[in-house]
Length: 264
Image (cartoon, rainbow, N blue to C red):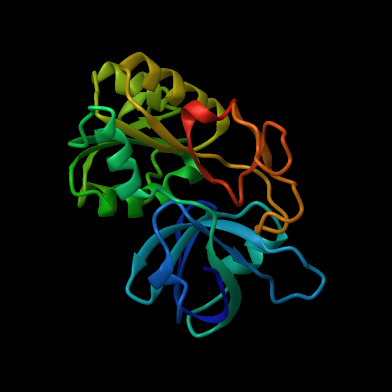
């Protein structure tokens, strides 16, 4: 179930160069959300009709947190908002990491659910924080950043074992998250990931190499956010029951998919 609310901002701040956070006070959205889902955030300016889809970073009672990068007029507007002001938001949207179902599916095939490996790259880092906090098993997290501005790193360290990879080598491993995981010889029973497409391709290949399932959150440009406009379809190995084509809507059937079921 999804809800539309004119939500009050409880906190808004800058976390890094171009990266900001907002904590919303919500009536129903936070209490119905799970890791991996997203919300649509609407501009207060009438000329900006389409909402901005932003992943959920944390859920704390009735409070819901987003962390986002400024990439245009809409997100720039949000970055200037202050506590006490309001924004219209809709959510929770999409399918997230349904941990009970994932655990049951893994164990039904004779697998274990005792150790998880998480990958987050760039603005795909924030949605992995709520997942890391919700997992009650041993968890390694590999986070990829451009440089030494490792936003959210300290919070990840409170709930998991953290490994850092940076493009410029200023912190942690010099390179990408997959090379970092291989250098550390990280293994797990299941992999979760969110980030840019090249990273997700690497995650899918790494999961296949380890012989474990991977659940990935795809980043696609969205318009409606509710599956009506078909602007965010991805290729799948299975045919859609209604359209009979090998497509799925990232905003509706995703953004989280079993990596084995999508073509990336």
